[in-house]
Length: 92
View 1: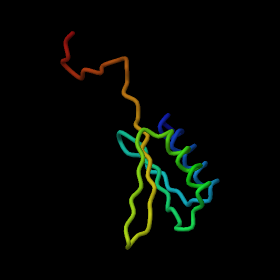
View 2: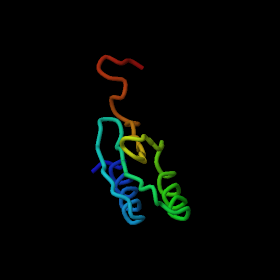
View 3: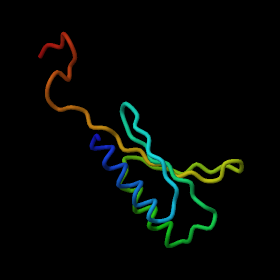
View 4: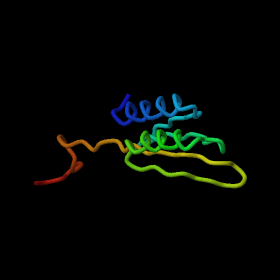
């Protein structure tokens, strides 16, 4: 599992511990965590949830009248700092 995957899994575990149902999806450049947020989430739980997603590179809340509220967090994958980062034919 990539470093972003480990971080995303930790975020998902903490959100689950706060009572939210989560899903983690690996993408080519980042890993996402999504969680359905119930209408009855207490103020104390919101503080905990916000502390958790603050560990991500980006986060937000999507709220619609049809689908409820979905909290999302994105953890970017790191770019290699050594090796052939310039690609084939790159000259220094």
